[in-house]
Amino acid sequence: MEEKIIDESKQGQSLTLEAKEGNKRKLYIESYGCQMNFSDSEIVASILTEQGFNTTQHLEEADLVLVNTCSIRDKAEQTVRKRLEKYNAVKKINPKMKVGVLGCMAERLKSKFLEEEKIVDMVVGPDAYKDIPNLLQEVEEGRDAVNVILSKEETYGDISPVRLGGNGVTAFVSITRGCDNMCTFCVVPFTRGRERSRDPQSIIQEVNELAEKGYKEITLLGQNVDSYLWYGGGLKKDFKNASEMQKATATNFAQLLDMVAMAQPKMRIRFSTSNPQDMTEDVLHAMAKHQNICNYIHLPVQSGSTRILKEMNRQHTREEYFQLIDKVREILPDCGISQDMIAGFPTETEEDHQDTLSLMEYVKYDFGFMFMYSERPGTLAERKLEDDIPEATKKRRLQEIITLQQKHSAYRTQQFVGQTVEVLIEKESKKSDQDWSGRTPQNTVVVFAKEHYKPGDFVMVKINDCTSTTLLGEALGYSENN
Image (cartoon, rainbow, N blue to C red; front, side):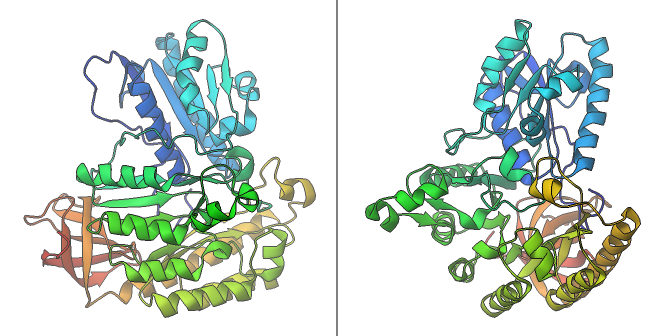
């Protein structure tokens, strides 16, 4: 995922949690792809903790190795296959080690994975993690194990995830699963299933538990969080058949934000990922109402061309996106905005590409996630559209997008110089063990001298300098949220 302006992921990181006394078996788990995969890995670890497993960072000592996979681009899948080669080498030394593939790649390839990768003992789709204990029994009895059945309801609302490899400060809370949008380039509806939402009370309970454990920030997660809609469970399409009473008592995303913000007013709240067509004005007003909801929206656009947006089956035009950006700037003047962008989608002309660049000039995103188009098996684009843009053209257009984003990122960070901002300390700076690293409400990284502060502290920091992606400052004292 090297095309990102800022890499916020923990791609391929082995994740660990505190050992549970009495557990004898060792679990090694790696996660790739979106934040939802990392959240799901925490659910898997929670399930397996109850089955006698403790996590380890040492692949060689593992009894069970799980890799949580991504199918959004071909490169992500190839990365996983290379990791399986590494697992195979270790398995030759430790033949009792079992290997399982989780997530979107498992869902897409199903039992075919067992044929293609002989090392794999178990294939588990995103909605089947509760079945892992049964599947392990199948494996231990010498049978291959596959469960990739997609659910019609939220599957893990009753599981309290353990927090793997975290900093004890920030955590993910899943609120929706699946997606109904059917963008022509995307495999998510096929690998994650139909969109369904989680009971708001179970969300509040998880947030409250995190607050009790000392966490200071949560991110509400979903493939499409702002289409969250709870009226008693099941698929969103069933809402059309819901009773008038159910409709009257339904909870939408703006209302959920309000509930979470009021439940823990000292806790920072973020959310990801939004779709432009579902980002309603009441969500923006909920953000403006609560000081603890961060002024930051990840708002993928994918292209600046209305024609290409239509080919992608995005449910908005260029003009409608501009209107949404204007509304965000009106209601939340200091809101940080980031993007997803695809270069070289089928039939994209130079005029379409220029539309993308001009849209970026209009918005001036804080940062972005940019990729060349990658044809994904089973998608409508793969079936109906020829991947007709030459590789060299894709690379050139992508580089032009990245270069422009770097310019805009530098512009946005420069606006902070001279200001005093609130920073939540998350971890030690990568570049110096003398500095802390944290983020502003706008999601911009800030680095400053450690002094007497510690992770989890809210600190007011005066910004004296910046790079294109990072703010550099000096601490002035604790914020009132501390």
